[in-house]
Length: 333
Length: 223
Image (tube, rainbow over all chains, first blue to last red; front, side, top):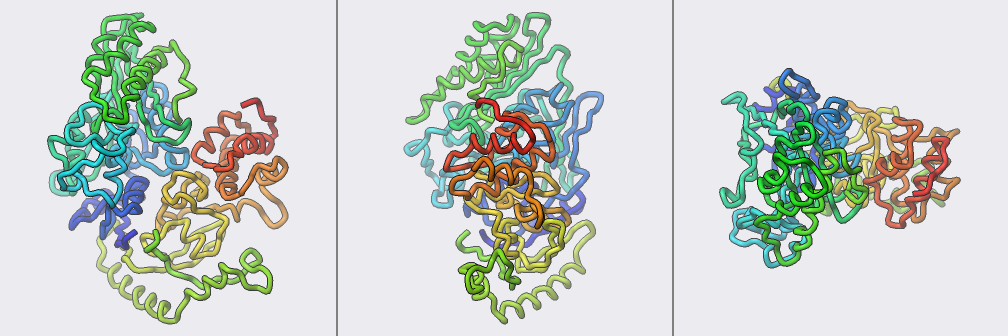
């Protein structure tokens, strides 16, 4: 790893004053230090925000919940309010990585993780995301890559929590010294590779992700998240599913189906949602929704299995959310 | 990490670092790395840093790219050593302080053999900057037992022979002991979750489950 200077900040104001001349923000450091050890990122200066107390903690508000950017995944997974009312988020945070990493990794850092692609994360490969022309995954080893909406880069969205936050209609709060706070809906936060291959999200370098706001779910909402990997524990998702069901008695008034590890940006499956809306949740409707989620799938040479895995992940997670099935023992976590 | 050699520090030889005739491979290599020139260089860097600190705005603690002195609270004692900003806690422990009980295997937080407690929370010391341990209480495998008594989890690992090659064992023990400190009556499921980040290449997991449940005064159920 290269050497670097470090500004250890204790206030948001102090940290914002340091965001200049290519300085890179470090919170829990899990993703950033990984990339620095890989040699893909070589910042000369880090701004350490880990010790900013005001960015830590979960606050219930009349219209929902506000999570400070430095709240760890373990803290979110264990929070009684999140578990009860935002189950999909506690599921996602509680099944990311390992217990130890969840003690270190922050929700802000999780949302801001860079893409999961072994070519992108290797210093040996200069790809389209690093300002070059070529993508190595299309013709290379692509068993963990995207099957949908990938344009010129079939990397996959790495964040488990984003799969939940998208279903929950979360808002990302960004703060800069010059412009103060602005809020971005999570569906507008990530950038599709074809829109700009060099930007993964809309956060500017001089901005700090300071909080995440989640509106209170409608009465009758049930939700769940499950992740499938090659290993039973500590694995990247090869398919993960977020399900949010607004129930009116037996009828699903509104459904949200979100998918990670399918595309470079976490996505909703409108096709799957349409199957569930206005219908009771049964094994048949859940299975049909899972099948519909693969509309438009274009698997690569080595990841056709995902086209079979996603419908199962979505089917089982719909039934889990509806209280009709136990958590899948074969799901990772 | 091959290009990264954290600063060396002269270490008092202890019973754990001295073998026959008082010389060990590790002790010899450490001694050979220390030079008078290095020490003089560090002194110069410190004065430069003090100048930089004077000009630093409020709420910002500035650390330069060169080695600097820090004090870390490890196993209840303050330890003075030199680190760089890029020094990981695992390296500070192993190379800076000679506490080689903490292992580095994957160096990416993927195997948890480097598990230590940061204020009682198990974390990966290979993915934690040493500077992020300043002001926190670090507990390593060396701090889990006292001279007269081993931790119940360690004793149970011995009783159950819960290790094969042993390289993952310090991390396993730290994860399991953290679980029992937090939850004195864990189920096997709790143990499985607690060590879900600890990789054992030999596959000794069933004995780790049994040992941890035994340490908590419980019997293993069938997996």
